[in-house]
Length: 128
Image (cartoon, rainbow, N blue to C red; front, side, top):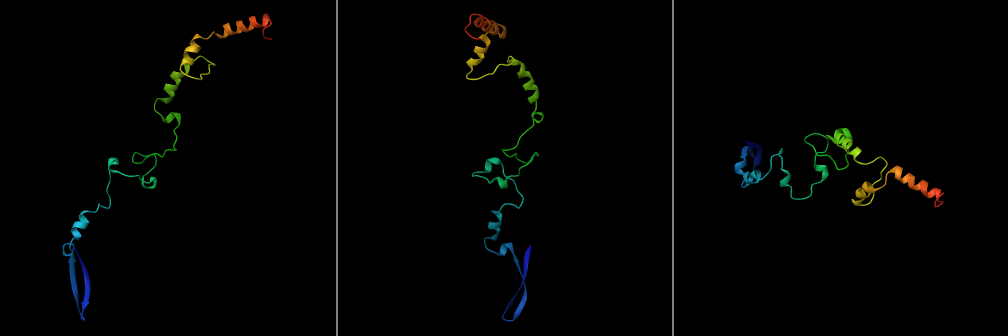
C-alpha cells in the first residue's frame, strides 16, 4: 500500500507513489513496534506499573484493589469454618498472652470451684 502525494517542481506537477519500502529503514522501524492491541504476561513486567494502567474491578479480567472487602457469605466455607470453631473455647473465656494460656485454661478451676473458694474466703473474713 502506498501513499499518494502531489508534488510540484519547477512549475510541473504530478502524482508520486511512495511505498514503505521506498523509505530507507522504515519497515525495520515498523517491525520493531508493538501492535496497537496486544497483551503482556505478568512476568514481562520489569518495573513498577502505575495502578492507573491496571484494569481494576470485580470481573475475571480485572484486579481487585487492596482496599476492597468481602462479606462472610462471599468467602467460600468461611461461615461453616467459623461455626466449627466457636465451640472450641468454653463460654466466657478470654484468651490473652501466649499459647500457654490454652494450657492454663484447661487446668483452671471450674466456675463452681471458684465460687466455692470465694464463699470460703468470705466465711473466714478474708474478703467481704
